Image (cartoon, rainbow, N blue to C red; front, side):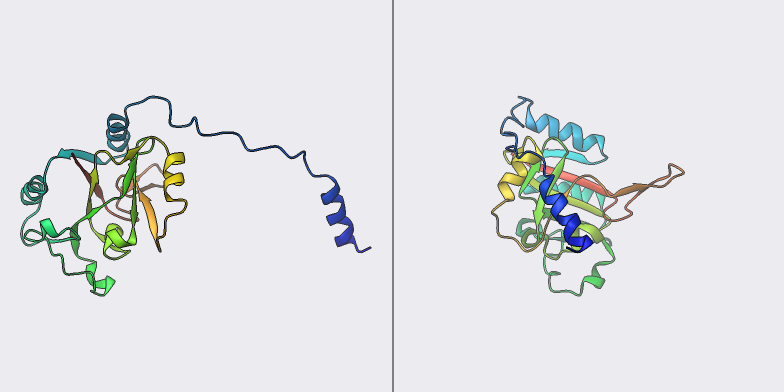
Length: 194
């Protein structure tokens, strides 16, 4: 028997006792109010949440915070009069000057303030990451308590690319210098639609 086979045989003989995985179905049943928790956590990591009732409020937000010379893109038809909706076939490199992108999210997660977004909602994979500022529209009744429920929800879903987005992009180096927008948007606004 070679030394390799000897080592593998010893490993096979010394396996730990098999035990069943714990039941984690109780996770997320802590009883916290998911909307207020989502708002608290997202605010704590640098994002902002604005509760809205219609797209008109997003239009007003865009007009109040951006000027007409800045490039604004969206995947939402209702916003096409204040943002470009016909950019999805552009070369991704041409999106480098996007100031604000508005997309939809599938659902949010209260425990970490993240939002699940797939490629079909992004327009292009690069859009949420290359824009200076990102707006995500999320239905207020689509917030799950924990990541455990989130992973259960996407477990059998059919999607090519998806990501959880939480707050503005940030990184800090050894000198404790915080940089916003290092790997994505410098700011995130979540429009919670009732």
